[in-house]
Image (cartoon, rainbow, N blue to C red; front, side):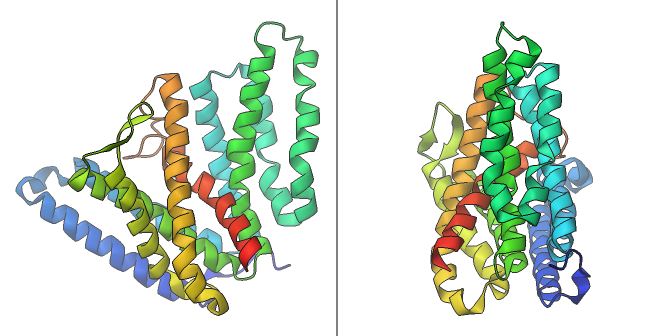
Length: 306
């Protein structure tokens, strides 16, 4: 296994970079057009702040994906660590459980890179270790609840996100597939936002997320198809037509599912955003909530069909 590579040597780098630059350029032109009457305040506009964040995230993702398993693992670990920090604050984990959870957060992605069998054994092994925590900490006042929340946080964020490493390392053409997933998730989320803002009339889930609409959900599918087509050059060519048709619905459903699940966590915590770490989006968890569900859904779909 080649653990590191020069991303510039990848045949996918130039087409991916050019398409990202085109999309960023067109979206910036659109933002300027929308804000043309208030250009003096453009730099503080919400849409521009979101665009600026995307302009940083997109190149970082491409470089990490095309630089080999080590760099991809570092990216997944960084997302996992910050995501778990935000999750722990949302659900009110006690410091001792939060610290153990953060310590366990660094296990899933490296194991995913090194061994498929080890990855599949990881969840039950860590569960066996985890159930000893209330005994070790002598937690008789909410210890089991803290344990349950900790295990959910590890499974939801660390274990599910580690499927990105499985895709990049253990699937043929994995880095190219990750380029497709990254673009499709991003455009699925943006498609939902844009269509929902313009045409949204019918609420999708009033209790969990009152701003989400069925029209916005249709935007999820439009964005997922567009993102898959945009980065379609990186799909395995022998399955190109099949994946172009059937992969986008998996991405769209996963994006919507992940967004709604995180909304449920935030609704129970009584907050609007998971944090303030990522300009324009709130917390990192607010940005990667879709990717968390898309990664495993896509991995198992691809394992079953390719």
